[in-house]
Image 1 (cartoon, rainbow, N blue to C red):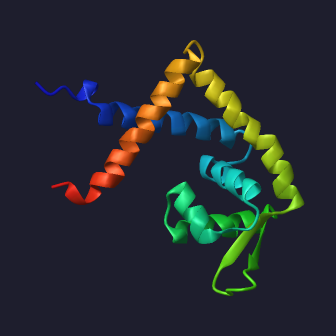
Image 2: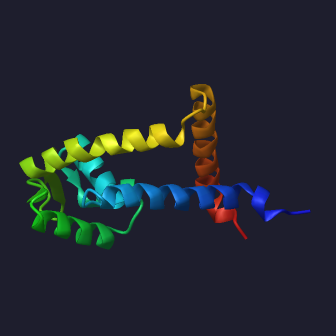
Length: 147
């Protein structure tokens, strides 16, 4: 018999919400959000990332990224520059303030990861990550076959 509390989809969905909520709570104490933290990570590591690529990496609509970048630009965290070879493309860069914020906030992700994996062997974490990645691949490969 089907038991919801043993369903992988239900367990991962519940865990995802709990983890997101807690990480967001910790970031709010520093005046940031989980989505902004993720954006800081990608913008800082991929200098000149386009809004479209950033939206794809964060898994949100491009219109959502535009609003996020608008807020971050008003706060002086990022700057936009048009692509020289294709003026339709807007690239995003961290300002000095953004770089400083990234340096302050990114370690919170590592601390959070350490906190939630305390007492779990690294080999189990590696297996868990591998299984989750495979599940995502399965979903993406079968998205057209779902009835």
